[in-house]
Amino acid sequence: MQTQICEINGQSLKMAKHILESEGAVAFPTETVYGLGGDARSDAAVAKIYEIKGRPSDNPLIVHVHKDYDITQLIYDEQTYAAALRKAFLPGPLTLVYNSKGRVSSKVSCGLNTLAIRVPSHVGAQRFLRYVDMPIAAPSANISKHISPVSAQHVYEDLQGRIELILDGGRCSGGIESTVCDVTGEYPVVLRAGLISVEMIASVVGRCEIYIPRGGEQVRSPGMKYKHYAPHCKTRLFDASELPLAVSEFERLSAEGGKIYVLCSEDIKNKFPADRVLNLGKTEHEMAANLYELLHEGEKCAETIIAILPKKKDGVMAGVINRLSKACADK
Ligand code: TXA
Ligand code: MG
Image 1 (cartoon, rainbow, N blue to C red):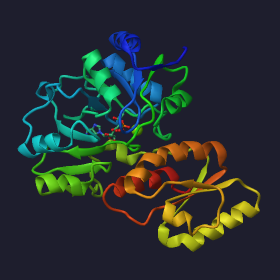
Image 2: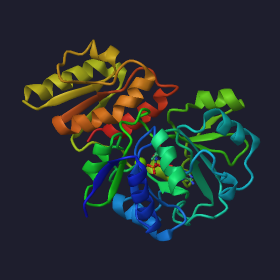
Image 3: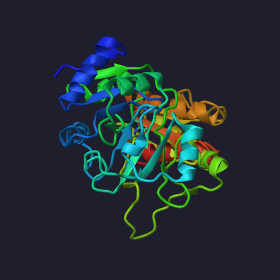
């Protein structure tokens, strides 16, 4: 199968709709990462998404809709605080998990009675969702466990030959996946950290907790239990407080003649005696936006990436730290 990368225009949207109506999958941009979308109402389309990615069949998908889509078609009784979160943050990088009416394929939520819904803010994503006029089930458009794609080229590198069409909406500005927040209970519970932080959610509705799976409990967000976001090269992970250890590891590996790159924030870079640096930048939004781009770049040039966790751990950095830790857990 030939894979085409097309700008978003009348012609490519028509092609996308045709593929989706034939129960196929299309890659499309969002403000976080690229998605691999299929008709959420079709068992065959949803099964195909899992197959293309090699995704474990118990890790549920997010349904994407345009901003004027009536979500009450898909979900039961939205709580007042959930409506307030929608008003404050959507369209944007926040996914809300509701009680499902079961109107989409049961494969989307892997048999759970909940449904994750996302309204992306990316102009191209909105245009695509409105044009195709169907709820689109979409995971990130990468091979399962690899780094999520933040450009059409990244999608191509992972999925060429497996899909027909990649809609190109440029580089994703957000850079890490949406915050996933369960809104079925009395107060919101964040299942996956992202660009909409726990603090931002709490500031709108007064209370927000972070989900921590208890021993023996079935995980509420099955995606949490899988290894994720990993580059193909070797990686080593250090905390900011272990800088001297990271430096000596860098020197040891470099002396052995390996191509060793350091992935760290700007302030740590200034203290690190390395010329091969993948610089995450200064602000939390910069670091989120650069993370996957740099991991993609790093895996192409480095034998080993030595990643150093930034000092700041809260706010948007909770999401960055979560992804960076999962990507670079020592291997
Ligand atoms: O930014 C994003 O969210 C991107 C773009 C494409 O929208 N999508 C994305 O999808 O990251 P994916 O499939 O890579 O991650 C979906 C996450 C997983 O951690 C999954 O477990 C969780 O959402 N999820 C989906 N449905 C759920 C549900 N009903 N209950 C709990 N967690 C759910
Ligand atoms: Mg993913």
